[in-house]
Image 1 (spheres, one colour):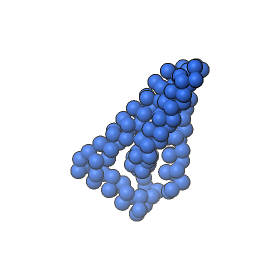
Image 2: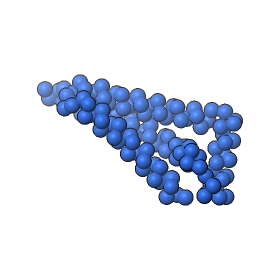
Image 3: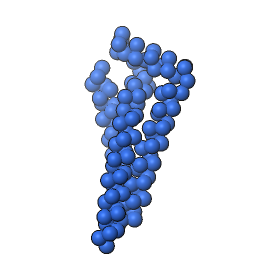
Image 4: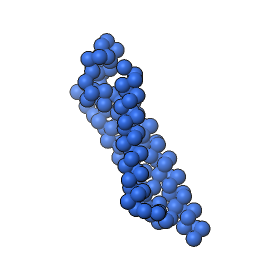
Length: 120
């Protein structure tokens, strides 16, 4: 069962990477100002993602009970989980990591943009 969750996590990471690569390709060769804007958008997306899933996971008693039921199903009979349930479990496991990852990448991109502005 862990292999299915790892595959879903890998697919999510690939989707995020392809989105960021597409944005960079659309903007073309980035100068300092563009990198600062792109880095800010990356950080904002990370904050939004973390906030959205934190609210989703801890939203109400019904949602908390649903996650407990899914985790109970995972322990008892992992083959009986649907893809939607696997997707929810993977989101619960990586939502804080995604926010931190986006923040660090965004700060790095903004820093590179500032360095490019100072050099030019």
